[in-house]
Amino acid sequence: DRAERQQRELLGLMGRFSRDRNGFREFLREADHLIDVITIDVDPIETRRALHTLKGNCALFGAATIAEHCHAVESRLGVMYENTLSHPDRQTLLELWRELRARMEIFVGAGGDVITVERVEIDELRRRARQELPRNELIASIEGLLWEPAARRLARVGEQLSSLAQRLGKGEIDVSIEDGGVRLEPARWAGFWAAFAHVVRNAIDHGLESPEERIAAGKGRARIALRMSIGEGGLALELADDGRGIDWAKVKAKAEARGLPAGTRAELEDAILLDDFSTREADEVSELSGRGVGLAAVRRATVDLGGTIAIDSDLGKGTRLRFGFPSRGNLATAWPASASSSSPSPGSATGARDRA
Image 1 (cartoon, rainbow, N blue to C red):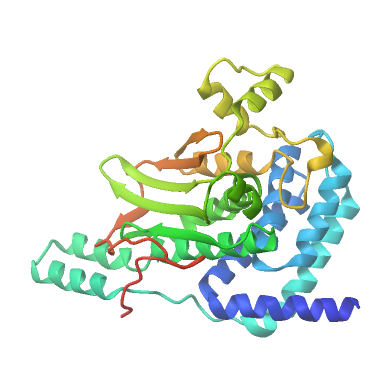
Image 2: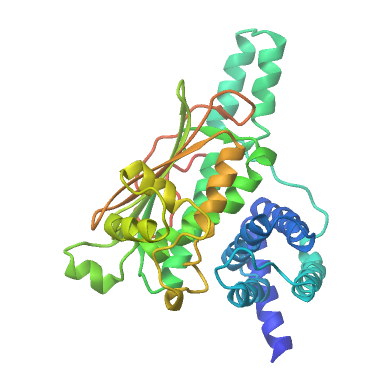
């Protein structure tokens, strides 16, 4: 049974790799880093964040063996942050990861990442070259094309949203994507996207109602919008759903019970982003969410990039998370934006452009 399960897991991972090689290799690199954090005795809070993030990413990419082990360890630790991983737990996780890593080498190999360049971007580069721009500006433009298109990243997130919605019985969802023609510096963003998996899971598990609940509420098929843009105010990333929204009264009661400031909406938003804060009861914790770890990890990753998080949510009307990042620093660059449109089918990436 174990051998058959491993074979199914490996086939699923091979499928993910064949569909998105760059994304899969990034997942492996980030998982290696998280394993290092977990297996080295560091701060208990950072260890728990890394464990939770590893679990989330492994679940999204189909590495069920690792995700289930992480969940089992979390369950034994409970919600108290002074409880830390035992040496046997760390060693078992390390051995499981090394075993899975060795099996994945069969198809991952040592190949390099693929650079995707859009036709409109090539045309823009030609235009800039003909303008005889200063050499440093032209070099910067060429180097920008080596960065990851936000369109590809957001399409990957859209696929994760749709896949998870099906898995959790939330039905088919419509995902719309606006990429703003942005390209992102891959190494700088790797940690953020690893933590962003928690936003994906929360949007589906917490945010969306079941199809039956939506019908009762007079709603149609669920919609989630992903938007990225860059301008004078910096880089903005949004994920907005039309789900059940946040019960702020419940958040307030939970915050007050813990002795946290809860007099304003800003204070309640801050409480949501704290470690070990969740409105779910202990018996409602699932393999996906409810431990109060994920959003804290997202905030840490956002702050590491100099960013901020804003939450806009009304009960019954949905939730919007907005991430803002400064324009300074080598985080992102703007290229001609694609024409944006809404996704007509579940999980499809919008604004597709010709490939060069």
